Amino acid sequence: MAAASSTSSSGTAILGGGALGLTLAYRLAQAGERVTVIERESEAGGLAAGFRVGDSGVWLEKFYHHLFRTDTTIISLINELGLGDKLYWGQPNSSIQIAGQPYELAGSVRSILGITPLPVLSRFRLGAAGLFLKLLPSPDLLEGTTASAWLRRWMGRAAYETVWEPQLRGKFGAYADKVAMPWMWGRIHCRTSSLGYLRGGFQQIYEALAAAIVAHGGELRLGTDVRSVTRGAEGGLRVVSSAGDETYARVVSTLAPRLTFRLVPDLPADFRERYDWGTAYGAHCLILALDRPLLRDVYWLSITDPTYPFLAAVEHTNYIPAAEYGGRHLLYLGNYLPMDDPRMRYSADEALAAYLPHLARLNPDFSPDWIREKWRFAAPFAQPIVTTDYKDHIPPHETPLPNFYMANMFQVYPQDRGQNYSVALANKLAQRLTAK
Ligand SMILES: Cc1cc2nc3c(=O)[nH]c(=O)nc-3n(C[C@H](O)[C@H](O)[C@H](O)COP(=O)(O)OP(=O)(O)OC[C@H]3O[C@@H](n4cnc5c(N)ncnc54)[C@H](O)[C@@H]3O)c2cc1C
Image 1: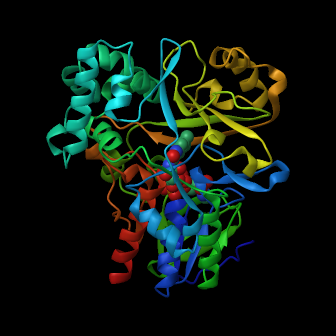
Image 2: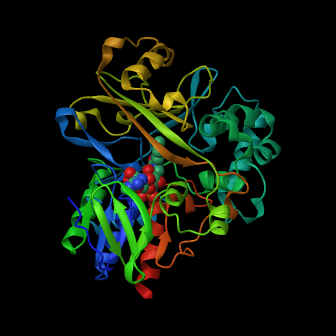
């Protein structure tokens, strides 16, 4: 959709058409405001977007996704959009690899006692400290502490080095020792072993939101890259994009702060100094369609052996039946990486060549002729690096540039970012903006 060039300032432009931008646009449009969502990609949904799996026509996320029981805000949205009957809850096997073998990590006493490579006392400490975090209602007393120091102290060296350290290293690389303990509290406290999936793909939420925005008189500009936002005529803000040049009364950027600061030169130096801050990793996933299961009954396998070239193997069809994807067994091989790491640019063929020798380590029967199809996805700014000083650098929604707002998943703290929290931020900001 091409944008007309205009100088009249009206309506709200929302930069980014992921969970946050679309929910915000929907709420503002419901309140009678004129909204335009500008999204670079050709489909809505951002990091949670899906693609259609071959001739099955069913949406699958580019990056593995599920919900937790505690994700109540997005569950409400799913129901509101009439998709509630597609929300499926199950308890698939989530495991961690120890000495080459998968051990279920469901948080139950049975699963913790089952981690037999750990001495009994370590299993007890792992369970007791985990229970403490489950019961601790707020992470305030953990502020300023790193996850590595806290977990090592309270769970003991063996449990930390066997269970947590490899996962922190896999996700945060060189920053593993600096990750904030409140973030780890969020991972343990707010998560459930019961997992939710929207049968037919989470993309249905984003398609439904897009349709609802248009039905309320809003606009969605897909495939449109925002290039800059500057002060415009009549106190408005001028948005230059690949589709033209327009002026809006209000602009909300849902892009990562670093990207937002690059686009908005009028944000003052002191604001920039405090909030144009920190590091984020990108995500890379190779998805294989196999003619049979690889991980047998395991849905999620955290890879802890650093000689593997990926950090998670997620067999989606050990959770949602392969029959829903034309009999394809769908396996994600995922990594979080520094954005300039050459592996972020791996094509599907390059990733497969690097990963292939390791698939037989996961299942000795594996043969390359099990592979029917493959897809590869990569995204920058996929995982904020949540260090102990992160909290002090979370930008506010309101900025010193009048009528310019920031709302993004980097403001989610201490919980790990997720669709639920982007939807919750959008609801909160919509309430504030429409109350003015
Ligand atoms: C590997 C992985 C696994 C995950 N697993 C889960 C999970 O299991 N459950 C869960 O709930 N969440 C999960 N998440 C997180 C979830 O995907 C995000 O928290 C959520 O989708 C963020 O939505 P958002 O709208 O805040 O940001 P984004 O989705 O990042 O949206 C920002 C949008 O801005 C667009 N954009 C960027 N620059 C421009 C520009 N210049 N012009 C126009 N548009 C631009 C982007 O294309 C993007 O669509 C996972 C994420 C990853 C990467």
